[in-house]
Image (cartoon, rainbow, N blue to C red):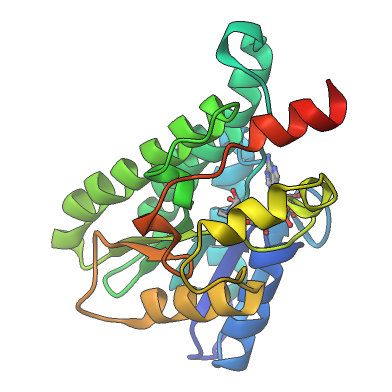
Length: 242
Ligand SMILES: NC(=O)c1ccc[n+]([C@@H]2O[C@H](COP(=O)([O-])OP(=O)(O)OC[C@H]3O[C@@H](n4cnc5c(N)ncnc54)[C@H](O)[C@@H]3O)[C@@H](O)[C@H]2O)c1
């Protein structure tokens, strides 16, 4: 067991994009950071309960404490509801919603008072996007799950928050940026007129993780895009691919 007193953080989905930037941010602010992902040092699959349970138990065993858990694992798909295979719906909901439930559940079991859990929801938790039914539904569910978990865990001194980013160019979203019209429509939906960076989201996650009187918050971070309406991505995708 480690004798150090620095805070220990686990970033699930920490090998790429927003999670990777968050691992760097938490390291900069003095945390010992465990990066957990489908590949890498701490392997976890958020859709597998035994894997999530083993991750949290392993961190506690190795570091002696667990202060911060960030859940940035995510995936998406595109398809109209009438055409969408059940398996594709299930794949996205399993990672984005059920996976978040498992991460919160097993973090809560090992955390003590002062612990803090931050999930990455999305602008799509509040803005519907045509062709994105499983992702939007899962992220809306994650926003509510955050609030319920904050209610349940508050009396134990554990805080639960989420950040809801708008467009951030990462390996998840980069392929869509090559489809004509999509980036332009996103930016037209955004009063500040630009996408965000993984580092900007990481900074907000760092704040949510640290702010000791903040719980049950789902923080919109999107250049004001939540004030307008989500772009019609399907129109551009169907124009590009038929
Ligand atoms: N990029 C954006 O514009 C944007 C906007 C809003 C919300 N988000 C959310 O932010 C989070 C991070 O996304 P990103 O853009 O950094 O994408 P990313 O693809 O760069 O990172 C996602 C990470 O999650 C991991 N992951 C996927 N399935 C997993 C599983 N079953 N178990 C463990 N890890 C798994 C991937 O391996 C990857 O490293 C996601 O939840 C995403 O939905 C992203």
